[in-house]
Image 1 (cartoon, helix red, strand yellow):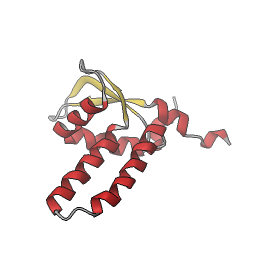
Image 2 (cartoon, one colour):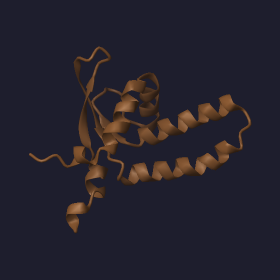
Image 3 (cartoon, rainbow, N blue to C red):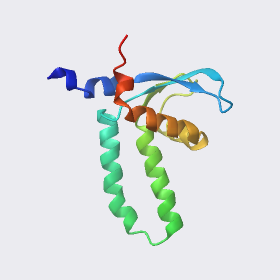
Length: 121
């Protein structure tokens, strides 16, 4: 039965090397949790609860801004650590994802691939 368990490995996360926008490898990395992690599940649930609140907003622009923010918050929950000098706080991660949307997309896709967390040596 244990061979199907993903939560513990998802909670620990794995290192994801970061590439610069020109495609060259950098010295930086992120430790990314999987989508089966406790932290991600909590953030996802919180985002779903926020959806009810978002649906009540009349302004399309305001609704779109809040949806984008909620998405960043959820993806930020996937980042457990990083190699940058700044402390890896939730706020710093959200700021990083705001300014580097290509990384946000990469983290989101990577975390969803469970096989990345169970690579065989």
